[in-house]
Amino acid sequence: MRAPFVIRDRSVPEVLRSSLTLGLTSFGGPVAHLGYFRREYVTRRGWLDESTFADLVALCQFLPGPASSQLGIAIGTRRAGIPGGIAAWIGFTLPSAIALTLAGLLTSSTDLSGAGWVHGLKLAAVAVVAQAVWAMAGRLAPDWTRRAVAVAAAVIALAWTTPFSQVAIIAGGAVIGRLVLAAPTPVATGPEPSPVSRRIGVVCLTLFIALLLGLPLLRAADGQPIALFEAFYRSGALVFGGGHVVLPLLHTTVVDPGWVTDDRFLAGYGLAQAVPGPLFTFAAYLGAVSAPAPNGLPGATIALGAIFLPSFLLIFGALPFWDWLRESVGFRRALAGTNAAVVGILLAALYTPVWTGAISAPIDIAVAAGGLVLLLTGRVPPIAVVVLSALAGQVLASA
Image (cartoon, rainbow, N blue to C red; front, side, top):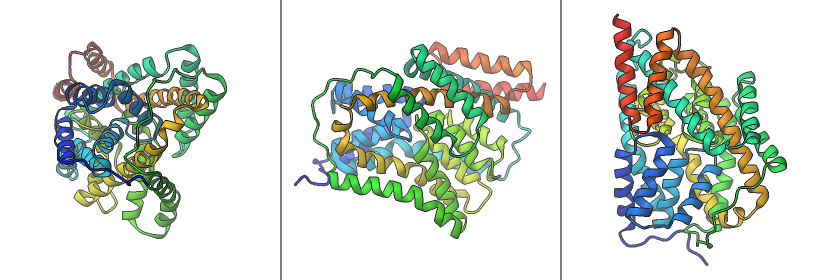
């Protein structure tokens, strides 16, 4: 019988050290994170080869949640079992989570609506999301069929703004992909023994579904702690594409019910671009500044744990079955349609709330366009664009 997980000597501390290095230095968002991970784990440490790395990337792109964080969890789990996966997440997440929690605590009692630097952060968000749309469209919608799926998804996302519209759009993309699109060529790899047993995998997948269905019932019968946990768990469980794609779902989750103001939301999103590590730690900031109790440090802890919990359950649940699933032609077709729909959802988010919440004058367009040009050169890190945009916003407010 296969053990639930395998721990190699000194592997867990080794995983923690390497992931902490990535958590302190990985600027640039989800796409850039994949490059950092490849350099650290494939080139530098040799923990896995190119084909296995590509295979794990495909798995994490298929699952809902933050792809780069899930990739780190998967690599850590492969290296040192379930404790290694947890250590990989702690190292990669902790630096940005601390920074954004502190930012939330420092700004929670301050009126940010008129601050020039906050407006500059909103303009930085326009540039960052536009660059993400451009990059993802090139990878995930390279032909006109998938571009059509993306455009249709964007139109539907703009016209149908409900908490579950993303799920329906993703499902529609999967159906279209299964029926119409060609299956991408799979990466040729040999079977890898799973560090997680199938029994543990089934338990994790069952718990994932049970929480997704049961938390809304508990939320109706309980107070704000359950409501906060349920809202962020749902965001982590239902968003496909990770990274910037979580923006519209989080906006619906915390701004529409009045938990967080739109100004504070977009300011925090801009701040999230200035720290390394996963963008999903934006949840820690939102939990700290949310209107209902608990907020502050308890709110940040609840929101952060809730939004990442689905990633653990899905990675531990999927690893034992991935070798079987990736051989399916129908699955690869559905995945192609899902990825194209993700591009459309992000395109819709670029318009609202990002563009509509930041652009109010021609000079705003110029600042955002300048930031986008700097990002597209590939020579200017996102943190520099964020700082320059914040300074530009402050200068414009003082003029």
